[in-house]
Image (tube, rainbow over all chains, first blue to last red; front, side, top):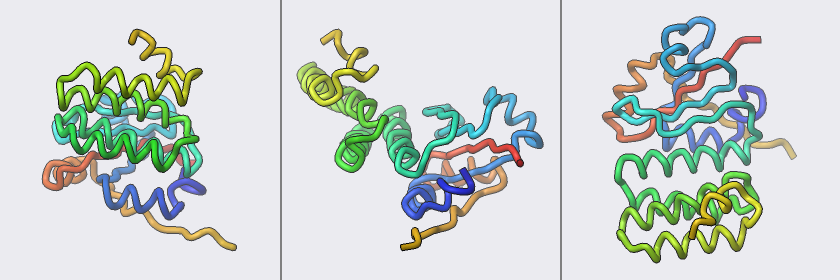
Length: 148
Length: 36
């Protein structure tokens, strides 16, 4: 990640502006690695202030996919901390900025969830998931939403 | 054309990162890496 992804201007800007980025050597920080069950690297864990894991990703990603993943993880951070309007805004932004990304379908899935959690209206979830099924019909997230 | 590059401002202490996470109400990104 250090060679290609982290030096990318957009990735670095996202990390510096919206996250507290912490990097530890898995071979030295053995207790911390065990705490998070870290086995393989790169190994990205997104936490909230209560040390709750809100998102996890393993394996290398190029800058564009990593940027989309960062934004989705930020959406999850907001969602799990009941900041629904912030979550809605971020998931919407992922779809707007990275429609071709492999993370776009997940963003649409959780956009529907975030809207529902905010409004408690079933139609907000259903409408969101119909959009997902229309734009990413073969995605795993569309399959997960096919209950509606 | 050369790609524009930037530097990530890494915290090297997990504990300090967690403090800042709480103070600044931002998510903490914990990256485990291996050298070599």
